[in-house]
Length: 178
Image (tube, rainbow, N blue to C red):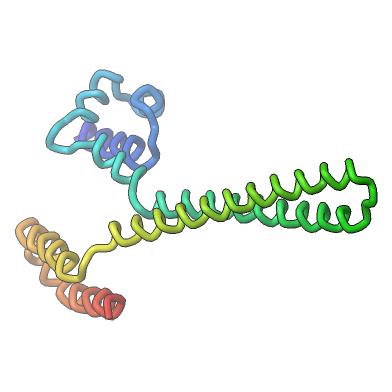
C-alpha cells in the first residue's frame, strides 16, 4: 500500500510538476532506480503524459502571445524612433546629417516591416494551433462516454450518483459548441 501511495506522489511530481527522478528521490523514500522503472512503465507512460502537458496547444498559444506582445512593444519603440528621426529630418539643414537621418529612417522602416511580417506569421501559427487543439463536440461526447463507462465498471453505485452531473456537464459543454 505504501508503494502505491509513493508511486502516486512520484507520478504527480514527475508528470504535473516536471521534477526529475533525482529530485523526486530526494523528496520521497524511493530509489532513483525504482523511479526510473515507474517512469518508463509502458502501461502508464509518464513521459508521454508529461510531454503532452508541456507541449499542449494552450501552452503554445500562450508562448506565441508572449512573442507577439514582445514584437508589438518593439514596434511601438521603433515607431517612436521613426517619429523622432522624421522630426529631426525636418529641422536639419546639413546635407550630410540629412543623409544619415534618411538612412536611419529607411532602416527603421525595414525593421518595422520585418516586425509586421513576424506578427502576421505568428498570428497565422497561433490560429492554426487553436484550430488543431479544438475537439469536436461528438469527439468530446465519445471521450466522456468512455470515462463514464469506465466509472460504471469500476463502481456502479458511484456512477449512478453522477448521472445528474453528467447531464448538467454535457449540457454546459454543448452550449459552448453552439
